Structure formats: structure tokens, C-alpha cells
Length: 610
Image 1 (tube, rainbow, N blue to C red):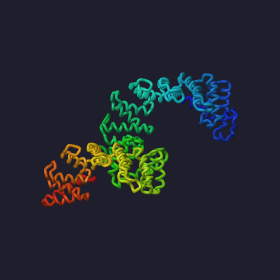
Image 2 (tube, rainbow, N blue to C red):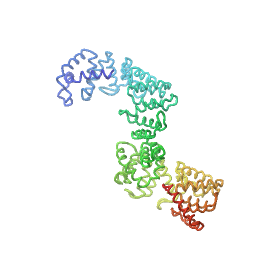
Image 3 (tube, helix red, strand yellow):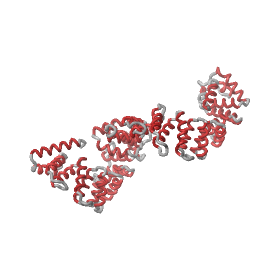
Image 4 (cartoon, one colour):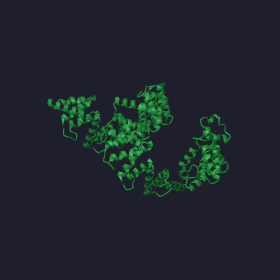
């Protein structure tokens, strides 16, 4: 009602400001007033000002509104001062709306000094007399505790009064209060009641919350049909806020994915998850990455998978880095180029207006490699340093590469290692593992071997889940290199890496089971581990499988199978496998050799990724 009333006031005064300029001793020829003055309407405002000067509160209020409205006059201090003057005169006579508008001027320095105490007093006067805007504003103030001490009870009181008066935004807030139990006991029934009213008034966030309550919240009777109805309403409205649509679309995608309230439909799930991801939803982005990578429920698409994983990482989704680490090693050089080429323009578009160090770092990396944008070491250094100065570990790692290889900077190995150390200290597991390697082997005569430092960094990387570091630490313990020999610790670290399908760990653990070192001898377990590593492409395990079948270690002797595995390992130029294959081949008939070679070819076809 207040907005409608103000509109009527402005319509009546919009064409009459010239007389205001005259009556308040303003020069109509003032350049600041150019385009605002309309002489033909002088008479009307002259009458309004005369009434205001005679003490008519309504006229004083209307003149006060005229002086503060940007539709009426340019926003200049002298006009704001006149506005406060006339509003104050009306408010002193108890004019309700004048109190409200005057209160707003005291919240800022509009027309005079800021005064929060007076603002609260005047807003309360208006709120107690039913002004919904005042009630809602007080609800906000007491909820935030910025203008007045935080008071959740008073916040609820004023929000509730505004909501009872059909103030749509207040209905949403009251629903939220009962939904989350803010200053009141949590009550989902009350939350639903107010959300329904707010949703009817067009509040999309209310529709979103209703969908969540009906579809996902424990304590609310599950009603998937209503959940889908409200979530669809929130997601498909063209005026929906991007973050609301993203959350809504994520929930809808989940419902189609699981068949909750709708028939299970992976195409619809893909559609809604993609909408959520395109609206900036990090959870949807990383879920799409996993689903496209897995390829069981969604069409397998490695390029889409890695793209969404990178974008999710930029959006600070914690799981994204792990997904990238799973996908990236399997990319061909051509695929890696295509992905970074497509991401290049995206990162370039969004890096400048943000303050996102990950985005800066990725953009610098693309300039460094020339993917998607022309290679430019100078720009690469600028963006990477910008990200590194904000603590971005990946950018420290790229500075290590640039200084190690002299890319756009003078080669400086000690400085490079300092950057690598910074990356490691900022939590980059790859950098921790790399430092372990450098200190174990030494680096370019500039960095001497240091087993103590090597073990320190390898151990940290291993503890953070790096399978390569876990495998190296296990090897050190098994051989007593830099640490006391300890087979139990060796087995522990090999097992951790093996659970991540690290082929060397699988192979070395299998050898321990064959030997019975650190674990009970178990030929069957060794066969399982060797087989798993062989499938991943480990030529040593392929060779060991040949030995198992040649000598009958836990299995019947089978020279044909032994030949097959030796032949497979030989393709990786495994010298012992080549020698063993040639020896075993002497014991086979021509048909057996041909069959073993055919089995090798079949195996390779079934393991194309190798």
C-alpha cells in the first residue's frame, strides 16, 4: 500500500517541480535543473507549497517526497535537506508515512546527520500503525544487528506483523525463521504455511524451500509430487535469481536421477544438473564431471568430465581436485590440448572481473602452455604471480616450472625449489611428492641429496593420499633407505597405494606375498595383485604372471599362458620377458605359439586404454 500511495504522490507532483524551485528560492535556469523544470505546472505545486506552509501535514509530506525523489529532482544535497525539512514538519504532526520516510533519511546522512536512534524511533512509530515497509525494515534491522543491537524476538515480531498484512517478502522471512528455528522453536508446519503464501506471491526462494522440505528434509512427510512441483516452479521461472535456479535445478536433477516423485530419467537428470552447473552450481559441476567420467548412467565423455572438474575447482569445490587427479592422467595429448583450448577463452573472460586466485592461476597456466590463447610467458608470469601472491599453491608450482626451465625468466634452480617448497607448504600434494623426489636424487648439482628432507616430504605427500609417494615410502621401509627397515610399515603404505590402483604398489605388494615378507606367504593373493597391476599396464607384473604360470606358483603349470603374459610384457620392451618368452616358446608347438599370440592380441583389444 505504501508503494502505491507514494506512486500517487509522485504522479501528482511529477509535472510540478518548477514552482518548487521558485518557491524554495532555486534558480530555474540552474544547469543542474536542466530537463527537470516544467513551467506549465507551476500553479499546482504553488498551491501544494502554500498548503504545506499553512501547516497541512499531508501537503508537507507530499512536498518532502517530491524533494527526495530522483524522478523529480537531481540527487543534490540541498534538495535532500529540503526533503528532510518538510518530512520532519509532517512527522511532528503525527503523519505516519512521514515518520517512516523521515526515519529512512536518518539511517543515512540524507539531508542531515545520520541518527540511528531517531531512525528506529520513527520507523517503530510507523510500524506500530501498520506500515508494512516499516515493519519489514525493523525485522531486518533486529535480525542483522547492524543499526540496533541484534534481537531475534523483535525481528520475528515485526516480520510476523508484516507477513500477517500480506507483505510477501516478510512471509518468506517468517517461513525461513520457522524453517531454521531462528529465535523461535523450529516448526516445519509453520514454515510450510508461510512459504506457501510467499510462493503464491511469486517468491521463488519460497518455492525452492518448499521443494526441499517436501523432498529432502527429515521431519516433513515426504511428498515428492509437491517437491517436484515447487522445484520446477522455481527453476523454470525466467525471472529466477541465478543462485536460486542453480540450487533448484540441482535438487530437480537429483530427483530425476533417483526417481523421486517422477519416473527415473537420466536425460532429465542430465538436463537439470547441466542447468545448475551453467548457473554456477559447484556441486552440479563436480557431479557432472564424475558421471561423464564414469560413463555408466550418463554417456561417457572424458572432455566434458575434465572441463566440469576444472570449472568446479575454480568454484572452490573441495572434491574437484581429486576428480581432476583421477581424470587428467588418462587424457591423451590431443584431448588435453582440446580441453585447455576450450577452457582458455572461458578463463580469460571470467578472470578479470573476479578476485579468484584459482582463476588467475589457470589463466596464467594457459598463457604458459598456449592452450586456448596465444602462448605468452610475460602474461603467464603476471597472472601466475598474481595468483601465487594470494596463496594459490598451483601457481607456486607453475613458478617452479618457469624458473626450473627458464620459461620467460632466467633459469634459477634454487629459486625454483623455493617456489616448489611454497607450493608444498600451501598443501599441494604433487609439490610435496616432487620435493621428496628432488631431495632423494639431488637436483642439477644445485640441490644436494638430503634423505631426511626427502622422507619428510614423501611422508607428508603419502599422508595426504598421493599413491606415488605412498609407494616410494613403502619401498624405503622395505629396503631401509633413509629409515629403519620396517616391513609392516612397508606393507601398510603399499596397501594404501594399492587401494588407489597404483600399479607399482600392486606389483611390489604381490612380491611380498610371494616371498612371505612382512605378510604371510599367499600365492593366491599375489596372483590377484599381479593380475590387477597387469591389467593397468604394469609390464613387471605381466612378466611375473608369466613366471607364475611357467613355474606353477600357486597354479598349474601352463607354458601357453606363460608365453601369452611374457609376450604382453615384451611389447613394453621388458628384456627379461623377451628372453623368457623365447625360452618358453621352444617348448611350445607351432599351434600353441599361434594360440598364445592370438590370446595376447585379444587381451590388448580388451584393454585398449593401454
